[in-house]
Image 1 (cartoon, rainbow, N blue to C red):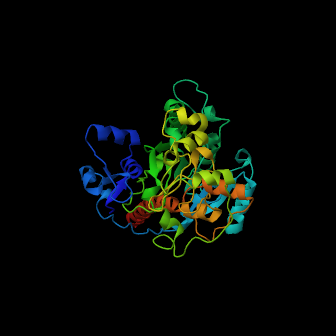
Image 2 (image 1 turned 120 degrees about the vertical axis):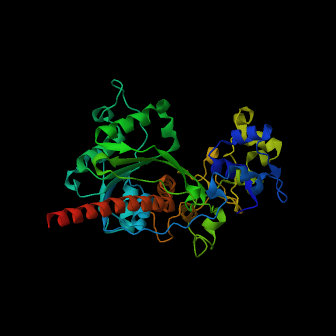
Image 3 (image 1 turned 90 degrees about the vertical axis):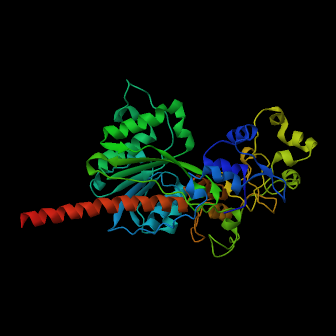
Length: 420
């Protein structure tokens, strides 16, 4: 356990906003101190003991034993991207019979790394899933968040037509898997005041699936050195009587140093690769930002010149002119490494992260190659599900399916004994 935790660390660990922490500070519920070395506001570990109910923060996390599948579990994946989710599920023991993706470069990346994978390139609406009926255990995919047109109080399958979620639901309807898992961004929870998510659950219910309460997973708790969040929607076929548990959060948090240097996550330093560069004018500004700092660490005159109108607007805008720190997890990677609103500058060198650094932060292995232009490679990596988090999800899928098939075997054995 660390001696001190930053404001961002504690907000992530307790699933509260930074403003909530500041309010707790004012009410004296949780009081920060100044770090003895860098002077930043931090929370001593002892002050967090009041949250002992969240035991994984303080107790030694039980190492989850890898669970091997009882037999080869089959899946299909929609909106597969560059393969972060597929790779994590493969490492957990699942076999993907088909992956669909419309982006040409992402499809080339999938084929480059896994020649055996059946990559179906093109519009998902044109894919026939019927050949996989009763042949797979899982349908999985990260469909985009799109609002529905409402008809009455309860949304049905046909009401979702015209959205990519409809295609995800159609794959489920045509294949009848035991499980279906959709992953999405936090925003789906509040999209259209929650009606979009409620509509999706209603559609899955109509198709014969029970949806357990959706949960937001924080990547930092699953061996990912990045403050990324993904929402999971887990649907279980009603007649199968399945039980699924979300991955148990792990206490150990990995930082940017773990991602880019030899140590706990990788055996070697990150390999050299190409990457975007800052123009000279931006270099001159970013040179003034310390590790872990952002635009407010600039001299006042340069703050105003760099921020323009944003300087006078409300909000912290903490992503602007932001330099990462070695000792903290990276902020969520975006599809481009040098966007002004979501800057992700290297801790020591005044430049954006390279392609391979991006991949390390997403926990892709160094052997995983990305195809396409530099811009396309950044986009593929930025959109991916972190591999280590996908593995943690995959392990829970395997546990669920193992329990189901073990029970089926026991019931079959009982039937045979009764017949005898």
